[in-house]
Amino acid sequence: MGFFSRKRSASSAKERLQLVLVHDRTDLTPSQLKSLKNDLLKAISKYIEIDPDAVQIEIEHEGREQRLVADIPLRNATRGK
Amino acid sequence: MTAQVITITSGKGGVGKTTAVANLANALAIDGKKVVCIDGDIGLRNLDVVMGLENRIVYDIVDVIEGRCKLKQAMIRDKHYPNMHLIPAAQTRDKNAVSPSDMVRICKELRGDSDFIIIDSPAGIERGFRNAIAPADRVLVVTNPEVSAVRDADRVVGILEAEEKENTALILNRLNPTLVKNNDMLSAEDVLDLLGIQLIGVVPEDESVLIGSNRGAPVVTDAKSRAGQAFRNIAKRIQGQDIPFMDLDQQNGLWGAIQRLTGRK
Ligand SMILES: Nc1ncnc2c1ncn2[C@@H]1O[C@H](COP(=O)(O)OP(=O)(O)O)[C@@H](O)[C@H]1O
Ligand SMILES: [Mg+2]
Image 1 (cartoon, rainbow over the protein chains, first blue to last red):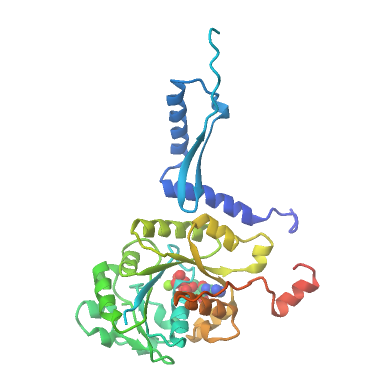
Image 2 (cartoon, rainbow over the protein chains, first blue to last red):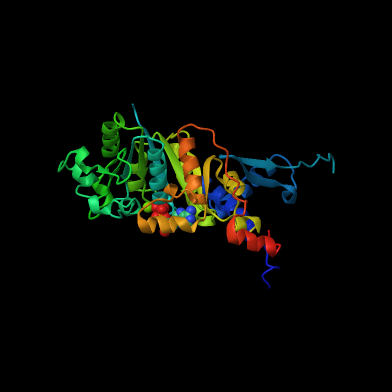
């Protein structure tokens, strides 16, 4: 790959830092975060039907504040199926 | 008068803490302030050579703590600015010779007779760092636009938050505007967005910093140096003045001319 066609590195530095800071700040490893998501989905599925593939659970940050944001589309109940 | 205690720290080593302390102290002294610098890097004394005062050391901070001398005797007067003093670190001891309460006590004694006390923190987040931040009214975190330095800075900012230190601000050092423009270096905006703290200054990568520390004469005393200008601006902001941020993109000199000629600007 030539000098001018190489992918610019600043954006990968920023993306990698975003991920690493989430884990540093929450003290959660990526695999712990994954099991947290799975446990959440399991708990919710006990009560309502959801499509696991449509679920989005992310840690978002604004300034130094972080929040766990879950977007969980619900399936309409189809009675008497 | 009652001094403001400012601690310069970073997490990662080698990002420019000692350089920042020496330059900010000189800039404040040039502005007529009474300044005392404390080298908090016990065992790895450096501020003395960066400030060009290594030949004047008789006593150090551990001598003060262990009662071998009076605080005044360990204060080395600067060669050019009689209103600036350095309290050197001990070179042959370790960090455990000093405690956070020792630092608080020493600063308390100094406060009444100075405008600013500037503490050079060691790298890391252990005892030496704890000692350095204990008496701080304000902490300035130095980082470089680089993944591991920013990560470590974030750790430090998190600890300062937990310690309820207020008004923590960032010095982004060694920024290379050409690399930023080519998208090969994190920009100041990127770093601020990641760290979520206020900015007090951006210092460009500048070879005059090395030349200054070779001579033991910090670059703020060099009117032409870009890094020197950046440190002078930070010193003004520390004093509460509202100084606009420098346009680091402005391409001066030969390198700028070459870039314009080759159309890379
Ligand atoms: N803005 C800069 N431009 C060029 N070199 C720099 C700059 N800031 C610091 N340096 C160099 O980086 C090295 C490490 O700086 P130093 O202040 O000793 O870091 P720290 O105290 O954080 O370990 C020194 O050689 C110094 O001259
Ligand atoms: Mg140092």
